[in-house]
Amino acid sequence: MNLVEQVRQAGVVGAGGGGFPTHVKLAAKADTVIVNGAECEPLLHKDAVLMEREAKAMIRGVRLAMEAVGAKTGIVGIKAKNRHAIEAVEAVIDDGAVRIKQLGDYYPAGDEYDLVYESTGRLIPPGGIPLQVGAVVSNVETFINIAAAAEGLPVTHKTLTVAGAVHNPMTITVPLGVTLQDCIQAAGGATVPDPVCCVGGMMMGVTTEDASQPVTKTTGGLIVLPRTHRIIERKLKPVQAQNAIGKSACDQCRYCTEFCPRFLLGYAVEPHQVMRSLAFTATGQAHWNDWAAMCCACGLCTLYACPEELFPKEACDQSKAEMRKVGQKWAGSMNVKPHPMRDGRRVTIKSLMRKLHIERYNHPAPFADVSVNVSRLVLPLKQSAGNPAEPAVKAGERVTAGQVLAAVADKTLGATLHAPGAGTVESINNQQLTLLCRG
Image (cartoon, rainbow, N blue to C red):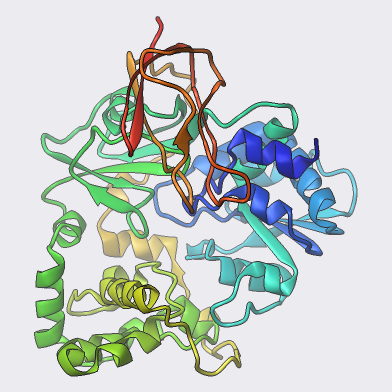
């Protein structure tokens, strides 16, 4: 069995949040494999911790991926500030085929377009993917999972950082299907009476008031904040209110565009133009999409650049959603040339944390070998890009650790789901499977 099939059967997906099935990337051809270890979301430390602890497995996964796609070069992107991670990776690189690219401490250093350019000097075509410039990019944990898949081990657990308003910020590895509340309790519990969760980070993550939601293959981090925190209040504001505020208050200052990392990299992303269109959506809805097409949803425009605290990122999100509905793609200029002020306008993590009012939560989150023992695991059938997996078991069936619970048909985009531990299938519906664990 080749690596592509091993990775497919193991259910490996992009662990950084994107969730794209990894076997599809490994079936392509490329000359460079890049590890995205930038981890630019404030307060999250999962990738750095994994590189410190499992550098050997990660590099093993990189070499396997290079062999699969025919690449001669491997690049590990790590922020220069993460010295321990760099030292751990350097210790297991024994030839010139894999090298480290040290990155600055800015946001969003982990954007694929930015990382590919910084690592190779290549600019991905507008609306394109790294493969078009000969690169395959995946997250640190994804490469560790590739190495495990080559040994016949499926993805059943997830490593994530739990930070913010918790007693003991930490990075932990938990079974898929435990709840966000389980993770918060493992970190000593919340320090505020009415916590809200930012799953995946404050900038690009999903904000939820429901801590009963399960950890999935793409949960990269969990930041807990009080409901009264200014950023939480903004993120919980209804879309209709966001649009109404933008329609009445945007003065077209252009700060959202001038700080946009994709704009500074030379792409035609102009959030201020999307904001301008809010006033004309009744008569020019198709036109409002154009300048959002290549937005990477980093959130800098909304949470850092806008002096009036409006919502250009969210307007871009809506624009892209409308484009997908009608199958509209970017049809403008394909010429890309980095802005001469790009380096000077980068937003440092220190500046971003100050703007987000989270400096008080800026603490290390070292790995903690804690057990999160629960009696029930809730496993969504869709934990990747593509289609949800189809159940391969029935309610009442007893299963063993690593057993296939749900799978996708051959040549169908999606990811297989495995049992994190032994137990009994309690229930199945069209969205999730519940597993009762054996003590």
